[in-house]
Length: 380
Image (cartoon, rainbow, N blue to C red; front, top):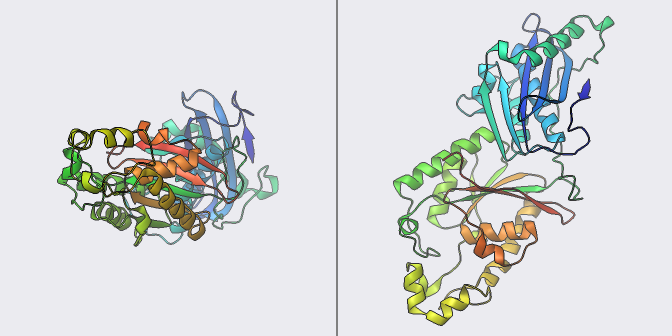
């Protein structure tokens, strides 16, 4: 059963919602069902609710099914951020990445839940006492009643099979169609050159201790989100080290794409902004306003744009409809965001990206694109 309520019905999207979910069975395993409710960010208006019996299953399977239903409802509402609250310590800890999923019945469910969660810019999981999860608990009990008494049930029973992952939906206002290649754009962690604010292009400084900590924090966040199909990195060491931390947490290999390398700053490599400006006064001034200008012995931002267009095409062809973690540098990430926004060159000069920050761009098979997140550092 599905019912949508509240003042947002028909509006098409909300920025932040609260999802409360629960599930259970009479017998564990036994007649099982789940319930989920989506509230607005103030936890006042009910935007949607879901409940269904799922035949014979365990409590944990039913709880995961409730979470999946809640995340699906939040996605249908167009939410960008989701606060999930459940009284299942197991599900909360596993989805947060602190506990491993070991039971074979829950592995595919956890995988589906993480794939759903990856479609939002941010998902937070919080354990709450059962008394604070009463709405979802009531819906789950109604579904369990239906499972235990199918003759008089008002809800349609579902076979206890793992639901198939849904195809990601484009934001309704873009008109894009098909499943996008979602690029999770992660900038590398701190290096000695970034501490001193020096041009760091083709040089290969290692991460600092703080940089390694940033890479680890990003990795844990990404493992909690889940749903990542591939990790692709710039060939430079600072990016590969950052990518390796995430790949280890995600249990994936790292694929290197040469096109994701940072801008070649030529003779300005290792200089501060002031030192480069004093060394080549007119050239540096022109470079700041003209993307066709090259540093001495380096490449222009127009050169980078051509290179990154090829990267975009490669990744969308190789990973259609998938979530791909792309670990790179400031200019390549800004350029991918520029493509997704279909914006002019001024974005390169006005957009700020912190070290180890995450941005998300989507590219659709029909040529459409969208940006879901820019410069998130909440996990650091």
